[in-house]
Image (cartoon, rainbow, N blue to C red; front, side, top):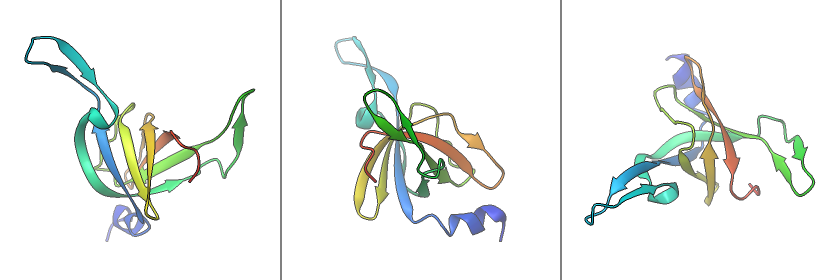
Length: 118
């Protein structure tokens, strides 16, 4: 058993990943599809959503945001700006992916949650 396999044993959440893309309508018009209208590239992949800041708040004049990370196996290629639907304890959480930190044992993807309540 490799380190990636051992870490994957702690992935109790799942993620479905949608990638933005440019499409051409039958009329010939080009459209950009993003969010849940993007192309599904992964479905129900085991993952772990974690607050890598330890719950530290980054406060602006209007909001307070908590930093989150999504951990997946190293072969799962989540790209910056991919739209994520994370299933955690029966709740669907929507998020936008940042640039992944890639390790031999896992990928650490910073995420911005649409609804910061987890």
